[in-house]
Image (cartoon, rainbow, N blue to C red):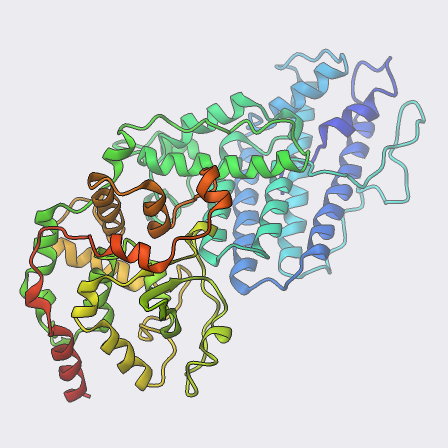
Length: 537
């Protein structure tokens, strides 16, 4: 995958002959072959240092990257399109005082050889990604023990690079390191798609060719592309240029475009920290927002809350001829009175509902569940995978609001324990996006049916609603951060030296949440729903 030439090593080799004015076919091919071997060795090294076996989904994601690059490169060779490699070619010629007219056959020959070498590399890696090593390397690849042909007879450079050769190898190294640490399957798929698009837009540049203009070009193009290109049929298997030329193209939102830029910035930050590049060129390069930060928060209004909880659909234990699931009753209420993320609520274990200093709390944590429920349940169902939190700051305790206690939340928890399950909502299965995919879609459709059609209003709006309530009621920001689960490290006094607030302190502020909507009609509804489900089973 990627532009095979490592420009810095290429230039070093050519500087051995200062009298050279043109690249001979033999010398150019020998250098390309040598660096192809080095690149393949680098990818093999990355496989060797991988700590854990790849999942089938991870193998599939890697294959998709190679397939995309193979098609893109094949298309460029078929169309004699050398735009992607001109920057590398120009840099090579300029640093070696080789004068070639960009319209000359010699110049185009160098460009085409780079693309052909890339196609060879991609084809080999497509096979190796599937575990196939039975295909021998082409005969024109220089043996590792055979020195590259040099006009001056100089000793060739080492074929073991100390850093990624180009963007594609950098991306592969980045994905390989993070897939074995903190990433979920969804996160890896997202990074793979975004970084593959990054390479498709700017080209598979050598690392030394990366600069601020590269990022500005990417920002300009990605901001004009539609969202979900890989999922929509009308954009499938089409080049970037073709998509941009399509009529009535609806570009992605600036928020989405900025997410792409931020992901690229995280890649380059990692590369900078490992001394692969001298600067993170994508830092602070996001598009200016069309709204103020506080206007971007799509909090629910009082009318929205009234609409959500004051309707027959929410109160009725039967919906569309089927029993309502427990999460359909409890999740909206828990979101409204905690400000927690939907995934944090959906993955809760029964052991996460506990007392601390006499206060009932939700323990939002990624702690392994085996350790937590061992002493609390003697009869548990099969345990699922470990839980995931968005950030380190998300690990926290949230006191349970008095309204939830009045509505029978602890009785619900006791009933679940009596069923011999370990999770609060065992009806939710873990998928690629965690446990919240089904509830999130259900709530979105529920809002649509209730006439709340603003695309910015989703389950996460409960979180903004709670945060806005605290802001308007002058709740200290350090309290809000503790409850919401935002980073507290920038507060030197409290974040670094102060301990976490005690549960009874947070409880006082949680119980202040009152959105001016009477919810007394929901008291006892959980018991009614539970009784209905019991009778129908």
